[in-house]
Length: 295
Image (cartoon, rainbow, N blue to C red; front, top):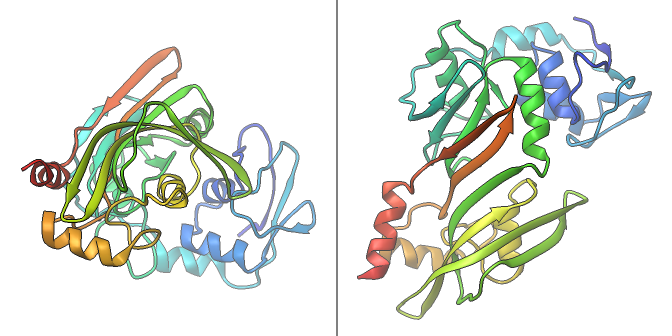
């Protein structure tokens, strides 16, 4: 397999990991991250270990890995697997689904459940080739957009990363927050991270204060919502990575919250002079949590 490519207008993707994923088809995404992390990927002769490294037209990409990349393809090829998809919208360019919680978007290490991309390959049946243009964490539910070919994927990725898009979430966070159009701004992944939130409701159960917030995400950093609310002392309820394990365990007993309360309910953007408005209602498990809080 060719381990050397020049970035041009036809194969261009802004992020290094995205470029590798779409220009070295035999490499599994997890293996791409491993190559970058272990220093086997070079840009213009310099080792790059950041998956989000930004590329430019004319950059020279080289994989200096002596192992048999072709064998990785045979061992780790993503295969179609049936999955019950909740399709919100579909046309000749994109398909949007309501991603359930507990389902990963892409196969990874020790992932036994069918993933979104495997389910879409099965659904496509060779009619189109699904490409992820953004991601939701495994336990985040809601609107997920998938492109039907590489060119659409390339163009949509840039739109979704830009400012001409509206991304909204609902989340239940710890603490007693107040106000409208509150701004959270910080630096994540060495880049600015911005979101705004409005308080929808305040709850108290036993001695635990909780706030339901409506969030408009202005940037798309990894775990951004979860990290930024944790940074102000109001982590997402149910989030054991950035939140309070003891309180989460209590919430599971009291209101049946079995995962972190985060749902992507609204995505709107313009592509090829067409306005896409994609909406996903709050999932039944999260509705039940709010019902129990309101009792």
